[in-house]
Image (tube, rainbow, N blue to C red; front, side, top):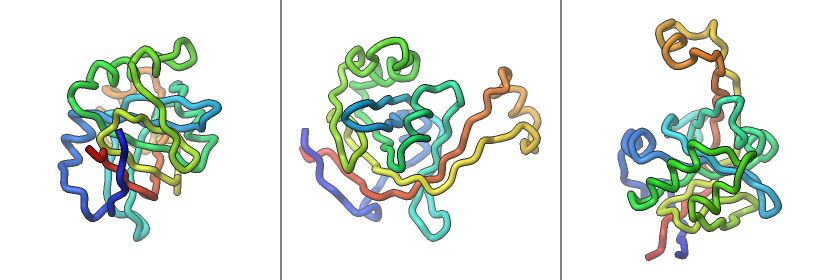
Length: 169
């Protein structure tokens, strides 16, 4: 499947559904070495007068090493038929297996970073800011107790949308 670039202003979707219900893949690395993970937490909006996506990654996730080591990474979305593939990418570690192969995904390389040909939408992102989320910053202590029983707090990445690609059917 090919892709065409569109302006971010052309997007027309509900980010709560896209991220929270349909899920997304966060992918980083290059043709030599990359990893991906499924995520259902994140946001889209304006920050510092830039169009951004905010992604959150726990410290034990292998993909975090790739996001930290590279300036660019991708966030991509998929049709319902790829739900099983996204589940594999969210439950298996690239440290232990070739989950991309197991999920049946085909890597494609864009601007020195990685995404997958099966995506229906790809955002190429440039990191602007990252920050670990410390326990003491939770004003609602129930979130800390409920979402972080292992104290494995996410790192937040605010990233500028550099390019939006959509499937060119």
